[in-house]
Image (cartoon, rainbow, N blue to C red; front, side, top):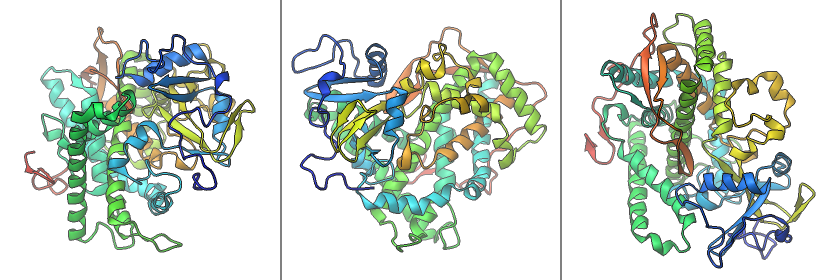
Length: 509
C-alpha cells in the first residue's frame, strides 16, 4: 500500500471532512444542528451505528454528521460503494474506532496503516494459514469445541433452562480460534463467568467506541485507566501463550506448517526472508483472538435468533443437514461446504446484521467519487454496510425482511457487484473470512440437527454495540430432536489440558 502522507500537506485520515471534501456543503446533513455540539439531538452514545442508520434512512446514500466540531461523511449507496471499491483510487482508512484500538493491536493486520510494512509482511506470512489445506486441518478442532458447546446445551436442556446464546457463542468462538490458531484452551465452558480475557477484550472495544462519543478524552479518565489495565491483561495473556509455545519448541515441523502461531514464529517471508518481530507477533495474536471470535459469535447469535423466529427456514435448513450429513456423527470437512441452504441463512443474517458494520475508505489521490463528489487525497468516508445491504433498488421492496433465498446462485448473479460487504473490501478485507464461514456453517448445522429452537415470545431484538454488533439478552429454549445422532464428542482426556488455568493468574481464574 502506498504511503498517503507523502507529497502532500494534508495529513493521512482527516479527523474532520472539511479539508478533504471541497464541496462538502452539497452533502446533506441532519436538521436542527446545535452550535459547537453539532448533530447530537436524539442520539444515544451507546448506539452510534443504529443512530447513523436512522439518519441514513432520512438523508440518503451519502450524508454528513457533525459532532463536537468535526464533520464526518457517511456513504451507503450501491453506486458510491462500488466506486469506493476501486483499489487503484481508494484504500482502507484506519480511523474512528479502529484507530482507537491501536494501543492494543498496533500494526496488526486489522489496525495497521497502509504505509506500515508489517501489514504486507504479516499478510504474506499468514495467508497460507487460511488455505483450503490449512482449513481442513482446523476442522477436527472445530468439531471438538462444538462438542463442548452441545454438551453444555444438553445440560441446560435437562435442567429446563433457556440458553444464553450470545454468551455461549462467545465461548465457542473464543475456544475455536484459541485452539485452532494457537493451541490454547481458555476453559470457557467450565466457567460460570466469562474468561477475564473476554472481559478485557469487551472493555477495550467499548472504550474504543466511547472515545468517539465525547468531545475530550479527559472526560473518560477513569475509563482510560480501566482500559490500560485491560490492555495490560491482554498483553500478559498473549505473552505467556507465546512464551509457552517457544518453550515447547513450536507446534509444527519448523517450516511454519503448523497453526497460526507456529507460522508467526517460524515462517520467513518467501521473497524477502523477513520475520515478524516479537512485538508484532503479540499484536497479531491479539488481533486474531479478538477479531477471530467477536464477529463470528455475533453472526451465529443473530442467525440463531432468525432461525428460531422463522421455523419454516429452520425446517428447510434442518432437512438439508439431514440429507447431506445423514447419520454421520462427525461430519467431514467437505460435507460442510455442501450445506448450501445453511450458508444462505448465514449470508442473509450477515446482510441484515453485518457484525463488523462499517469500513472506511480513503482517497489515494485527488478524485471524484462516482463522478459527483470531489475528494482530496487522504479524504475518507465511512461505508455503513447495514444500509448498503438494505438498499431497496438492489435487494427489493422487502429488503428489511429475512429471506435466505436472496442468496440463491441465480439471485446473486443478478445483483450488481460490491453490494454485499460483510467482510470489508479489497486487499484489506478480512483474511479469516473463510475460517469464520466454515466454523459458523458447521456449528449451525450441528445445532439444527440436534435441537429444535424455541424463542421467547416476549423477546424483541435489541442490538448491543461495541464496534461490533451482538443481539442483547437473547435466550432460546431447546427441545432435543427425536432420533438424533450423538453429535460431536467433547475433547478426550488426551486432547484436553491436564488442568484448566489462566496463563497469567493460574488455576481457577
